[in-house]
Length: 255
Image (cartoon, helix red, strand yellow):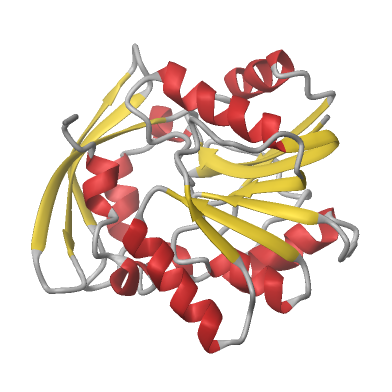
């Protein structure tokens, strides 16, 4: 059996704790932006990639959109299902690997917010497979909205210092960050306490992308219009030009 990757171990038995993380608190504002991008068209079918505990799927479903959420983590999906059931929402939460999706043009729009798989994979090729599979899942005039790590940020700032300033007590902590200029990967030790109180230390690495790389990959997947902005937690906007101060970028691609 293949050794589990850090991102698989991280999200085991983490649903409750995940919802307390500081970076999960922008859901309503992010869904306001997504709705605008959908022109408030409730007939659209949405795919939420790396849906985690279903925070965006649930909020959009409450707003009467049809959403399917996919994730690799069974415990995250179970938590998402419980939350949806409590609110009498019918959402398909399915276990899938975003590198190998079974859908063919079944959705109008895909969202992938807060590193929903991409860019956590251990190779650039695997990250590209996620973009490719999501693209295959949406129809010819489809739209793909996602956030990812901004490679311009670590050239100007310490990732470790930034994580310290955005982390509340009890949240995951990141230390020993090493940013590799040749690969644009940040290597770090992430410490979390899971839902049963078990402390886990994980050796993680995440790929940061510069805008031109994202544009090139999406062009190769035949997107016609690609817009990239700074991603502000809970306040996505087309008015926020991407800068070196943005930890994440917001990408909107249209076929």
